[in-house]
Amino acid sequence: MTLRACQSTTRALLARNLSWRAATALVRLLGKKYSEKNSPYSTTAGKESEKVAGRTVVKERRGSVVTVAINRPEVRNAVNQETAGRLLDELTAFDSDPALTVAVLHGNGGNFCAGYDLKELAHHTASLKLEQDVTKGPAPMGPSRLVLSKPLIAAVSGYAVAGGLELALLADLRVVEKSAVMGVFCRRFGVPLIDGGTVRLPRLIGLSRAMDLILTGRPIGAQEALAFGLANRVVPDGQALQAALELAEQISTFPQQCMRADRSSALYSVYDAPSFSLALQYEMDHGAPIIQTESVAGATTFSSGTGRGGKFSSKR
Image 1: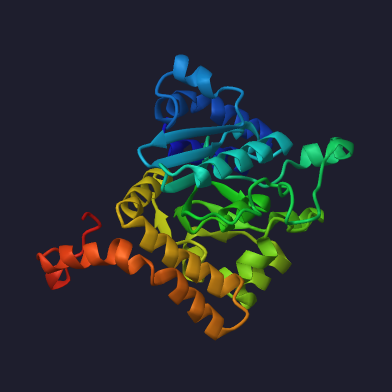
Image 2 (image 1 turned 90 degrees about the vertical axis):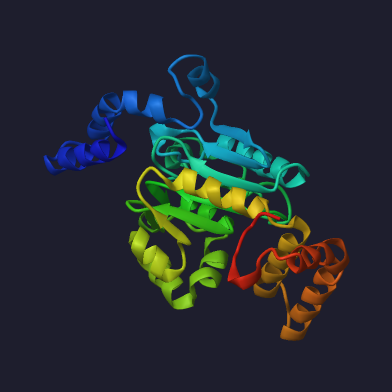
């Protein structure tokens, strides 16, 4: 059974007033063969499936690219304390590993992330640990306080809402499937955005559009997200991860010091620079050293004929 067929079945069952829980259970049963066949981490129901079972976060290295998957599909990849800690660990490890160039964050089972696990919040409040000093410790969703030195791409399918939206905002780029839904769904339940949502969203899409989403909590589809600048690419359902990997592999072929210096300067100018002149100074200070380490070699490649006539290639 295809993923699209599963989604169509779900909508049909809901139209007949069947509860979401019952509809999801039935669709999961019908789509079991599909998910086992198409999971990026398990090609069979045997040993590979056993490796990911019970693990809330799963990573896979693909050359210089690493994928990090939230693996709680039974709750639409809602994040609990354990998952938050593992996400922080994996992205911290990625940033400190010199062999890795780009990370791709996604969710297993058809959804990116439905936010923080509200059942844990409701029933285990006493055990929750919330570090209010944002310079210390993990954020509630885990890695959302990180300032990564290398690109992160979010491959968004299904729901990316509430804290899940905030995780997507952590990424440099968002590849979004056609049927994906994003939004500040936590508005309905009195749960605040404390993982960077009110900070990153206005900077990415502008204050007016951010306020529309923050105040109303309304859902936003892929095409509107693209028009807002919240989505960078919209792809057919089931293709977000592959498209994000291809994008990551392309970025990985570029001269890395230059790319990271430009990325760092862009982020500094938006989030940290106290003035335009200081932003320019930061750009110069971090860009000038690259001329000797990478630009001269690039200029030599160009002079030999590569890239002339407007031809673009990420390969050197």
